[in-house]
Each structure stands twice: as C-alpha cells, then as structure tokens.
Length: 428
Image 1 (tube, rainbow, N blue to C red):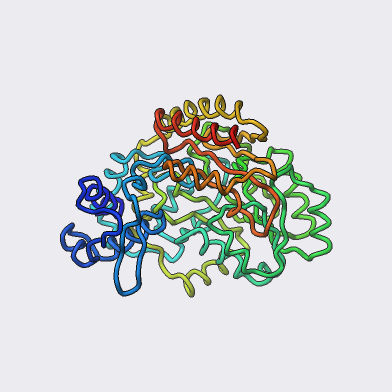
Image 2: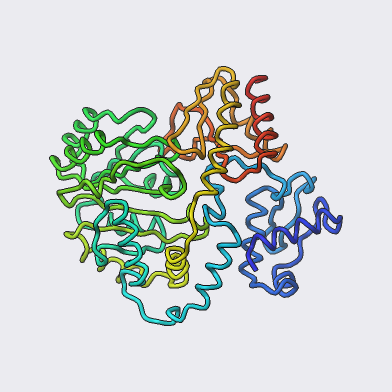
C-alpha cells in the first residue's frame, strides 16, 4: 500500500465523522497492522498530513487533527503548484503495469555494474541518440538522485572552487547551493548577459556553470541555438565545465534545438536527465552523461560514496522504455488547460504575465506593494494551492510573483480555481 492510500483512509474517517477536530490519529503501529502496510508508510503519510496542515504532531504523544479538518482535506484541493505531477505522462493504470512487470523481471536478482543496470544504459544510449546526443554506454551513469548526481560532479578536483548557478533555480537544489562558498549567480529572469558572464569568468576564476537550457524552472524559458553556441564558445575559451539540466523534454511538443552536450566539441558538458516528471515524482533516479575525460573519476566517486543504485527503480525505467507509452494524450490535455489559463491571465489587473515555452505553467509577477503571502494563505483556506517564487531563489530578491501550473487539475477545477485567483488579484 502506498502512503497516498493511507491518507485517503484517514480522509474517509474524517468524512464519515469518525475523526474530528483535535482527535488523535490511530497509532502508527495499529494503523499499519490494520491496513497491512509498513510502519514507515504510515509515518510518511502522517508527516504529509502535518506538512499540508491537516494534522500536527506532539513528541511522544502522537499525531492529532487540526481544527476543521473537513475543509483541509488534501483530496479536495485544487493544486496549481509546479511540482505536482504525481504520475507524469504515464497514466496510473500504465504505471501499475510497469510496476508489475518490474516485480516479475528475473533480472531483479542479477548483478549490475557500478555505473548502473546495463540494459537500462543501453536503452538510454538509444534514447539519447534520437536526440542527437551520441554517448557511449560507459559514459552513462544511473545516479540515485538529482542532488547526489550534482554532488558527484562537484567532487571532481577543481570543480568545487568557483561555481556559477542560475537564479532562480529548481527549488529542490536551492539548499545545496546556499551552503556552498564561491557561488556566483546568473540571472535567468532576463536573457543571459554574456558580457557580464564573461566578466565573471575572468574575475572570479569560475570552474563550473550550472544551467537549464530546456524549459528553465521556474521561468519556463529555453535557450535558442545561437545562445547555446555562444555559451559553449565562452565556456570553452575560459575552460569552464557545464552542468546541463534536462527535466521536461518528454512532456511537451516544444521542439528543442540541440542540447549543449550534442553541440559540445570540447568535452566540457555534463548532461543530467531527470525522469520523475515522466513516470512519477517518487522516481528519484537520474541519468548522467559524463565527458570521457571524467568518467573514471565519477565512477570512483560513485563506487566509494554511493554504491549501487536501487535496481527496482532502474527496472521500472527499463520497462518504460520497452513499452509503447506515449505522451500524446498528456500533451493534449496540457495544451487545452493552458489555453484556458491564457484566457484567464489576460484579465489579471496590474500584473506581468510570463508565458513559458511549455504548455504546463506560467508565472505571474505582481506589484511590489501587493500582499502576495496573504493571498496565498487566503486561497489555501479555499483549498486552492498556488506556489510563490521565493523558494526558487538562492539569496533574497525583490522579485515578487507566483507560479500557476495546470498539469494536475481537471477542467472544472481549472475554471473554479482560476476564477478565485483572478478575484483575489483584481480585488487586492
């Protein structure tokens, strides 16, 4: 049983009146036994209830419901935040089939290379080849998570001394860079200022540039082919290595010009491809393509610090590549929802609206005097969840805005939620 099922069970008890304001939730041990799941699954479920302000915990006493829990049910929420893509482009029934095939796979008990499950790396080699990325099987590493992948690259001698990081940045790795010294920020709110970037390379002895070339999070913009070639030439001139991130390629009809790795003739680009937005947010592993000069160093780090990557997740991804699942229906729904979003955003008063290169989300910049935090709180009381941008910036900033993502809402929820947001914006 997944933790989401445990949450739905608790919500059903609330709806039926068996649990109400202030009630103590069943003990982790008792509920795990009752539902036939592990105690860790129940604990994760309860922690999610706390995170979503449906419950609170008291040390050594247990978990308790907040006041008016009927109005806080997670299943009733209209969620417009960017990260909410629980099943990616794979329908839940298709995901179940992939899971079943992975459990039945005889290779589950076989040995694997430290770089990762060899059949999966062969599939990835073909996957990348279609995208004009010609990497050898032994240049591809399966890493257990996005953060550990970056840590592996930065462990290489000299690559942890001077780093340029795009800002804002994917919020899942904001804290990683907040803790590092010698971090320099490259603004992605506007087109890249190559003169400023070159000056940074000269004055700060930069070793690594971290950048998302395809659908940057959270702005949604992508670099065009001219910008990519200019960036490669500049980094090559100053011997700066590039960590290139690719999150969303499968989910959209947007035609990407070649990746930096595909264009690289100097062996300076590390290419990271995530898959959690393809299959599930809970699939943490990523594929890392390493320049040949650094393969042995990354292999040594993975063997010494990370060990073998969980085989089951690799089998799941292998089964995905063996299937005939496509993103056509997902993309069609995205595009329909995005057209509705665009119509509503035209009527947002005194706001700057930034439409992205992907039919999934937009972000809205509000005036400096606008009380955004209050609006987010008031909307959450209506079970409408939007996401502010502050968690995407490494340092404090003056940019005030929020993201609206349409990838996890029904047509009815879309209209209901957007109308409520528009009313809040225009009556502020």
